[in-house]
Image (cartoon, rainbow over all chains, first blue to last red; front, side):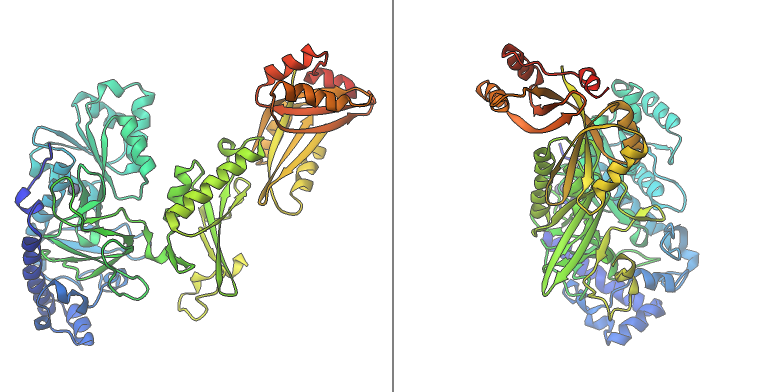
Amino acid sequence: MEHYFDPKVECASREQITAWQNERLVRQVERVYNNVPYYKKKMDELGVRPEHIHGIEDLHLLPTLSKDDLRDQYPYGLMAAPLSDCVRIHSTSGTTGRRVVAFYTQNDVDLWEECCARALAAAGATKDDVVQVCYGYGLFTGGAGLHGGSHKLGSLTLPMSSGNTDRQLQFMTDLGTTILCCTPSYAAYLSESVNERGLKNRIKLKAGIFGAEAWTEEMRRDIEKGLGIKAYDIYGLTEISGPGVAYECSAQNGMHVNEDHFIVETINPKTGEPVPHGQKGELVFTSITKEAFPLIRYRTKDIGILYDEPCSCGRTHVRMSKPMGRSDDMLIVKGVNVFPSQIETVLMNCGYPANYQIIVTRTGSSDRIEVQVEMTPEMFSDSLSEVAGREKQLVSALKAMLGIYCVVKLVAPKSITRSEGKAKRVIDKRNLYVNSADPASTDPAAN
Amino acid sequence: MTVKQISVFLENRPGALAEFTKILEKSNIDLRALSLAESEDFGIVRVIVDNPFDTIQILKDEGYVCSITKVIAVEIEDKPGALVNMLNILGDNKVNLEYSYAFLAKKANSAFMVFRVADNDKAIRVLTENGIRPICHEDMEQLFK
Ligand SMILES: [Zn+2]
């Protein structure tokens, strides 16, 4: 039986959702124009005024916002509510530059927690469940979001935070945890630990919500098998609230976006043009109910696909695919969008290590894409036909995923160059960016 | 009654085989046989050495991907039709060859064939039934002493 937190909203008609979005967008645009000088300036530059925005069909008229805008306006520049109305901040890790701080009013926190409660309910959680939250607590939104969602649902909440595996496993077995919330990599680690210690028959887990990291279908299968659960994905960014912007349902086939709070679009990352649903594009979110830190057309740099088709779970909100990569990583080869993460998924599904390098070259006007893959003892054999056969399978799987032919080259272990311990995944030798402002796009050292 | 062959993954680039053989030389490993199989983008070098287990460790330390395979080695009698006869015995008994190669044992002044088959036990059985005795690794070492 499908569980919902708020079925009236989660299963609302398309007309109802659109009506909510129209009304809330118009109000939100008015608020930011009048309260946030930075938005006013950006809109004025484009000659867009709040009265031009009548509903979601006018969304494309509005300027987009990037992470750079957020960094520029650190810390208070994008606030749309008085600081005295704010009750909390959360912050990004700042690993790729200056931190972003997001502010929340009490209403913002409540709505965010409701989004997380919907995600938990979709994973089967009810007030009778025991929810173990081992996302980090603190500035990171993971712990606070799922913790709040579990409270809203009335489940017994175990605020474990991350780490201390012994204690995690002790509480999991002693208190009969049924729902696990953590990063997929930690779930994989817990799964291994449970099996190593022979605790499989002492745990009562039935589902897990795993987000904040990229993970593959193969990882999902491993975790589901290892812990005997269903593993659900969840999506969110600190900038737009935190986890719960979108979440998976029992169909496990895309994440429902909480469209009553967020308008999602897909755009072409290079041109900014809208991309129709069903096709890959950069995910762009507009928060239409946020008070303190509302973002209008925030470009996530995550590439995904939106699906309108009805979902077997009964929810009507649009679904988004798992992010397939970052728009900064996107390559256009033979006119096709290629994301390194797609290649990674294929490699892992075929049993090859996720350590690879993509080399794109051009002769005349024809592109050639070579995927270099490191040989491993598992994939090696004394039989040439066996190794070559596996290689052929990989070529076919890449073709199926990308729609173009890739040359596969098997290379010696550890031969793919790593800088600062991290491999350089893409070498584009086509010099398509010679006039680009970003000299990092080409790598002269690779030639 | 099998010989231990080491198979090593080699990149298909100039110098890869030379680097590999240099390591054997540097480590005083005696090479009894070598055969190379190549595809468009990689190669597999198969060697028979005096001490396979030490060799595998050395190669792994050097970062090579390698494996040990038991193969069948048989002396080819110095008379006309000896090789054909042997291949016929295997073929008639439906023993499929994955690959094969030859090597010479100078001291013994004789030539040997190496066969890689899916079912070693069956191959050994049909060969011995026909009076051909595959050698084991220790036998082979005697040939070079
Ligand atoms: Zn659904």
